[in-house]
Length: 464
Image (cartoon, rainbow, N blue to C red; front, side):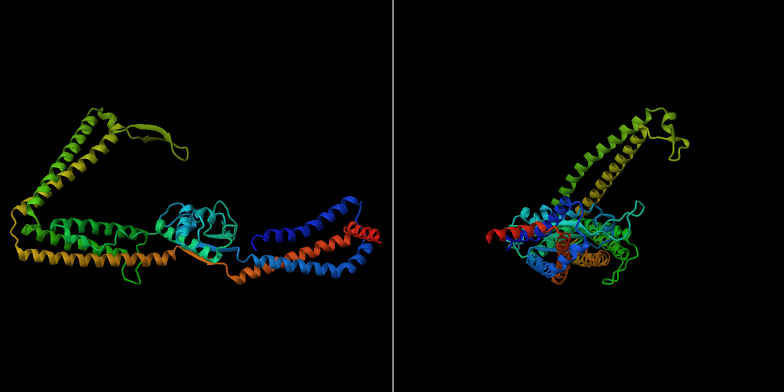
């Protein structure tokens, strides 16, 4: 059926074209069109045939359109998150709608196995994306960025054997997965089962949990900045309240655990751990000396500048309104001072790390803890694990609830149903039938069909 559709389409278009051609010839061959009194009787006589031909053409048109139900389909795609109206993805990068027919999405769709042996390029050749324009005027003061698009499928010779609904649904699912994975909010950094802490030494457990809870605090602060008033209906928590719980875990629970471990000098292998801390100190000391030397070099460079120059340099300039003023500009010493401060901060941090490691070495060297203290430390680790898992769960559920309420799932898809397709085809058929009726009426009424009638009479006379 797909192979003969182009022929049927050509025939349907040929009839109106021939009518228009005959009418054009009539205009060119005659100085004026035939009078109404001459054309009206001829039109009345031919009306039944005109009406029958128009109805027949309409029936053929409807059959042609209905036969294409398997080869044509579409769905509307609406981006439902707030940033879409600004042409941005949820993570504030530029939204590129054409990605739905991109190689990554179509390759993923093909890999599902729902599209037979089609290649991504073959699927792409049957798809197109168009903008669904919004209502209202668009001006430079009130720019409109569309959040609705239509993806249209028109079968090709390669895709004609594939069910159109399956193809469109597979592409939509693949794009949704790609979009949420690429641009949706990621909570992977928060989700952890903390099973690896059972293999860590006591002080390493502290460092590991301290790093993890710091990530949770930073993440929740970012969310709180985005919306500081949101309270989840699922957890009854706000971003700030969960953040406070994480800070309390960091400042109280973790610090109490570390203090207990250092008090009794607990370690799985004290000798090995002390050796590791000494090695870290040697490396950190090298970094400390480098940063301190860089700091001193920049301080020396600043001292070589003339004092009057380093205090201020004023440059004549004008502001946005054209008013003249003296602007203070940066000079070399400004950059030297900034770099000196950075290196000093690094050096101070290096020194603090060395002193901390030395304190840990002293605690481990004077170990006084026994089996009872180890059991207590192990129980504290389990309690810490339970507490941070609870905080993590509350954080993730609060964030997911917020995203669900604000993003509405990021994208909604509305597929064209059979009834709307039939209604659309019925309207097209009525328009085609009406147009064909008008075209045939004009041809007969104007006498443009006279050459055809004369030819028929001449052929009949020859036969006689």
